[in-house]
Length: 266
Image (cartoon, rainbow, N blue to C red):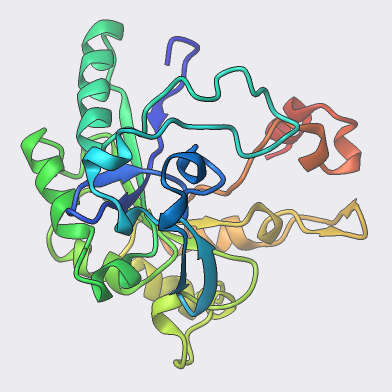
């Protein structure tokens, strides 16, 4: 934030006792030291139709989660902070947002992703009600507030659209379908058509597409831009693509290891 970041972007999952915490996935074997502290909690679960083995937040109370420390998942990134920091709750992040807004004398935004929302609802740990309660407690429920809520699923965004004025963003993968729409005709590809974008605009304020849906990469070569940004704007939707990384291994060869070149192109 001191360097100029505008938003804090936490992915939210739930603990066993229903507390919202920030982890990229509910499987935390690779992002915490849970394997050494709770070796007997390893489980196999079906999440969004995929079998996964590891340690899952929904098997731990918040008190147990707070015994863990975060670690860097990717071996080629800086490992010096491993073991130093707790797993934050959503409440703690909102408090940080408020204190930093006051300290920096500018509004710090919050950009929330609900992770596996239909899965969590199916096991009796829905995310959305608690999420809105937290936002309401901080006075962050209006359209002009610096808040976005994003999801790869559809039904939870539609549910949220009926209950809050904050901006909602439909995340879009480059293939497949939303986990809560499998078995229906709705796919991520169908969302990208003019009719699909109009349907998204009926419940969301923007789309979050894989950046390759804007600038395709074929055999390592960047292709001409698609019409997605113009099409989305025509439907009245904002466009927030993902994921931009500075690691050279994630950059297209045309950028010659310089992430700024990618940012400037977009």
